[in-house]
Image 1 (cartoon, rainbow, N blue to C red):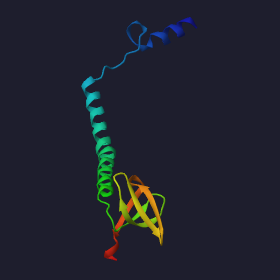
Image 2: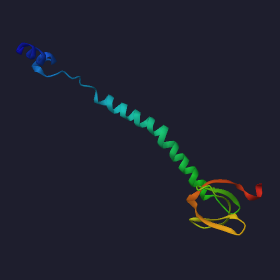
Image 3: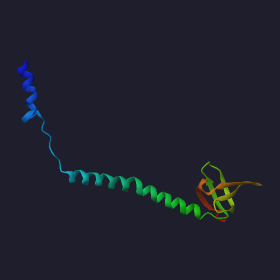
Image 4: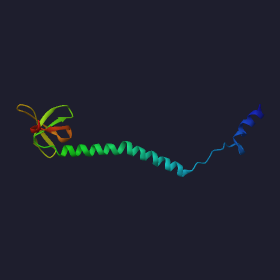
Length: 112
């Protein structure tokens, strides 16, 4: 029985230590760079483009635009401030919203 255990212990190589292959460290770095590049072009870059377009859309909102808020309220812009918009949602009903609450600009009211 002792001879079986001794044979199993020395099966890994010289001195009883298992052999491990040494890979190329540059191959690992190239693979990681490739994965990061794919991740960047499929995830980060399109998201940055959408954020830029949204920021531009919000900055161009002006009086007379029909907008939809992130809460689903439809209205027409009747006043603008630096960080907020006054939106008319019904007759004699005006609500002030933060510019960031605007999710979509439909069109100018006079273009109906």
